[in-house]
Each structure stands twice: as C-alpha cells, then as structure tokens.
Length: 175
Image (cartoon, rainbow, N blue to C red):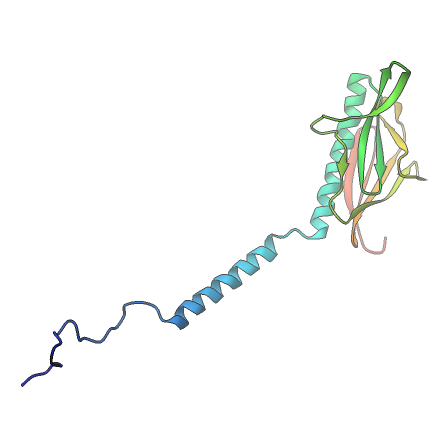
C-alpha cells in the first residue's frame, strides 16, 4: 500500500509549517514599531516652555559673565538688546577716540539671534522701559536694576539682576 503521492519523497511532500512569518504578522510588527517611534519623537521634541527657559538662563549667565569681565578687565562693557537678539559691546580706544564696538570672535559674548519665534518683549532699567538698541552699561559703571522679558508664544521668562547677579525665572500666566 502506497501512502505518499507518486513522484514525491516523504521529505519533499510534507506540508510547510513554521518556516517564517505571515504577511499579517509582519504588518503588525511594523505598526507597533511605527507607533513606538512616533511616541518617542513627540516626547523628545522640546516644548516652548523649555526652550524659553533655556534662553533665559543663557542670557542671565552671559550678563553675569560680562559684568564680571568688565570689572576684572577694567574695560566698560554694555549689553544691547533688539527684538530678535542681543549683543555685547566694549568701549575701546580708537583713532577717533573712545567708541563702542560689538564684541565679535569671543566664544561666549558674540552677537546672538534668538530661536525662531522668540522675541525680547521688553527691556527695563530701574523700572523704566528702554527702546531696542539702547546700551545697558555693565560692571562697576552699572548700579541699576536690569530686567529683560523674553517670550516664545505664550511662554515667557524674565531675566533680572544687578551688580553681576542675574537670574532667570518663568512668568506665570496672568502676571
């Protein structure tokens, strides 16, 4: 009695089982991987609040550094803010006499542009509103209170300080 199909050996005519994945199984795995990647990308993207806080901290540190450097070097330094960025200036002796010039080529005190969408909303010295482009003296020549408000959308931070001590704090809604 013959139990196999004519022309087939036992190993060649066995049904194929457990030799791979079905198309459905592969599609399910791809969907799970894509959902996981989407969640990871969304979680890693910084929110506006974190970006504006980071920029506020950076400005506070740079103002403190410039203030200290001005006192140590004896060279008057100033900070100048505009709507989309800021720069530090040094008063230097030129052929035409003393004049202010933008600090360039310095690793820390170079001119900076704020991230896209971020603006300096206000600059105050001793409570008085300053216009963009006006110099704020730093170092021993400065005895005033400086306040700079930075915003990105609805998220805001205020950098305040005097005499080398600058700090940054988020502004709560409605204040």
